[in-house]
Length: 191
Picture (spheres, rainbow, N blue to C red):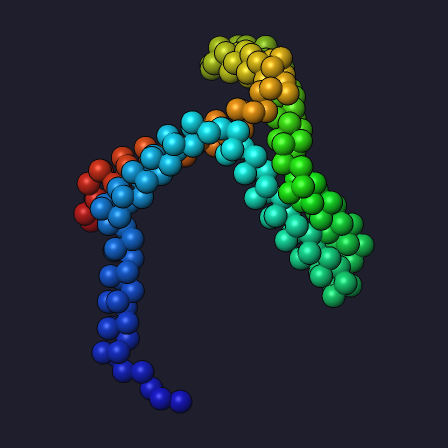
């Protein structure tokens, strides 16, 4: 085995640090931020397409996970039946999501609306039970907002399925892009 000289190790570490500094460059981060912002605003105009595509991609991910779980179940004795059952469940859910993305989108929206209602009720209960502590007014406000959002989603269901998930994904992309842009514009701290 050949010995690695110190100069070769230093050259390698310099190349690695140059790669890392390129990725941490404000220009690269800013470019990625602008791209993410642009795609977020473009996709905000097509929420149904984005939502159904997300269900389709999620279905393929579940299909791959199902295959992995089945392989684990048949190859390893540890948790064999649990892995086989989980693999079959993932394959069934993934297959349904790929074959029926619109129905999957409707079900996902219904579940999301119900979860918003449940979290709103729980937040209100916590706000009332902790009413003598600081911040209970904000907890109460948060519970009301969650209840209103859940009621809006469920009131308009299934038509809310056409816009809700895609809109949420696009808005998340926009806020993520803004965060990256501000990180790129922030001067680096020198130690």
